[in-house]
Image 1 (cartoon, helix red, strand yellow):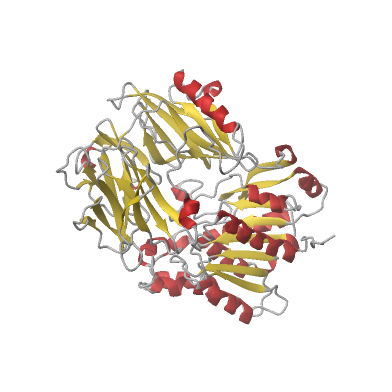
Image 2: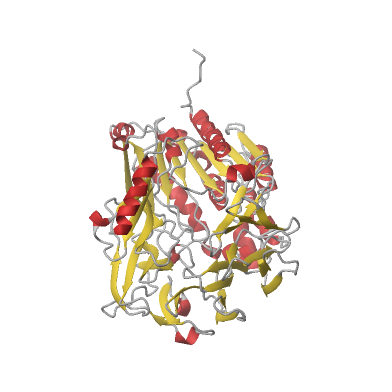
Length: 634
């Protein structure tokens, strides 16, 4: 087809790029935003959302210059490069969307706790005050902003950890007002997409353990019209059961692409319709891949009328690729086109191996997924009975999934003889929402499952698989993953030699009691409200800073933080480090703390500084494990 030949043409042109800054990657390309220019003279620079206008003449973008996640809003003329709209006094959240034309943008403001709670409409170049369209006063709820893929609707969502409500604004009607898709109902989550005059809804309505895929006419107050979406054979595609879950959906004119999970791994499904104006399904297929464990999701898809979808695929040993999959023949492997593959200098995939396995938890009934990557020559030593240094990573909160994805930076550990292990502990969403929710997940009053699972995997690495020994085992987690590491080394302090706690949430009860601290109230539906007795006592039993053991031998610990972090305030790692130094035995490893004075929760925005920060962390691990080589000037 002409589209495939044109894509092949630009792919070949891109491959001939000489790699210099001055020469274009493609002839006639336009760089509509150079973030290096934005960052010039700044200690921190991170863009929020970047959106081209309907005519592609203007660009709206948000940018954070401190790391505190408070952004400024800018509109620039792409052709001239001039900023045509900006208010120095306007502070907003990172989301921005265009209206029906180049004259209107929508954005969100935050309250004092840095919770997005107001939706505004701004007229470009107008002296009139921006128009407040929506305000969410319940502090449990965050407001979100999105636009339908066909550009017909603005969606504004109010969402807590357990309940959601979505309003829509019809961009085809200049006089339209916000209307509600479905009123909020306690413990009912839902998200909305639009295609061909219908809402496509993912929801756990009626208490299903995972999300269902439902449809209704695109009308206000549609909740009584929601029906399960069925395939060409009349079978419900996503019924909210335990085996298959849906997490997202993108609807093209002729097809929809669903993302979710099955068998503990991310999946992509292609749904085809009889025509562009019907919801009658005539095809429902799941994309298949050769590797046992991998990460797959959607890439950048900007054209609703496209006849192909771009997916992103990688694995523990396969670098990231962006692949164009034809929507009409998604199972035809020969018809797929690799648009771009991550180049990893010096990487030889044949030298590495990986596996996906499970570890039985201490409860005797739960299998914890574990992903492992290593150099083949290192694993040969393990098989000959020689334990090797091993790094164990985990997270386990918010239903977030830690995927079996490729990270070129891991090679610095792998090539020095370490085995890298990801424990997919409960509290994440790897096995569906049941892996996260009560009663058998790791939320509220079953949160301890997260820490127990991590320690169980560590013991398995030492005692069952005999990969390593406590003197060779390091562990790592960031943010809520820092909570995981903090409490895991309390439970089994002598099981680990080194621990990395990045921006760690370790003072759980003290932080969650204080509603004036940013983001606290919205977290009550994750951990519980410690102002209530039943939650207070349980949270005290796993809050890391409150459970440091007097006189125990602790691993070498590196705690990091960011001065401008609104999610985990810098004093949490500072207090925890002081407590560790005070209570741990003299046989413990060193406790070190490092606060970045120019960053927030997500570390450095400068990619080179980020690599330096990561190198510092890994150097600490290698040094404390005794496998770092001293540099010489010879």
